[in-house]
Structure formats: structure tokens, C-alpha cells
Length: 84
Image (tube, rainbow, N blue to C red; front, side):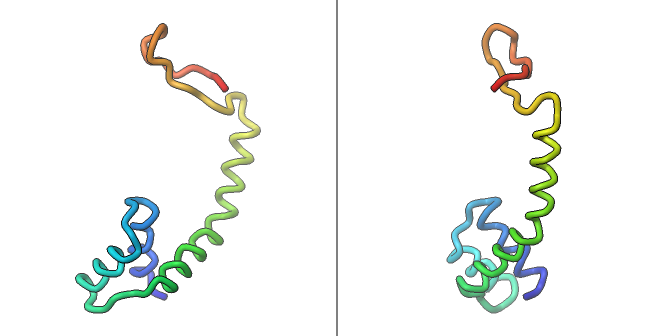
């Protein structure tokens, strides 16, 4: 599976494009469509490759002094403040 297929399949997650629409776009751009299984496989491979990165980000966030933030729209004029 080429990088073009992997990149276009991410349209499903990033831009909420349905698999059918992704396949139609692929047909328009490259002259052939891709099936649902190919798209599922590309998403699975992306998840597996990014799992270590996700784990590292989670570990760094958990170890940081401020774990979460919220944006108050009222009293403090929209400042980002530590919060749960």
C-alpha cells in the first residue's frame, strides 16, 4: 500500500470524509478506487505506528506540573487557567 493511499485514508479521520467519498476521490485523482478493507488496513497501520508516540505524549502530560487546562470565558477575560 502506497503512501498516497495512506494519506488519503486520513481524510476519513481528519476531515470526517466517509470511506465511500474517500474512494470516489481516489478514483477521481488516480483513476481507480480503493475498497473499505484497504482503508481499514491503512488506518490500522497508522494507529500501530503512532502508538509509541501517543504513549510518550501521555507520559509527558502525566508527568507535567499542569495536566489539564480550561478556558474561562467569564471572570478572567478568557485567560487559560489550570483546572480539572
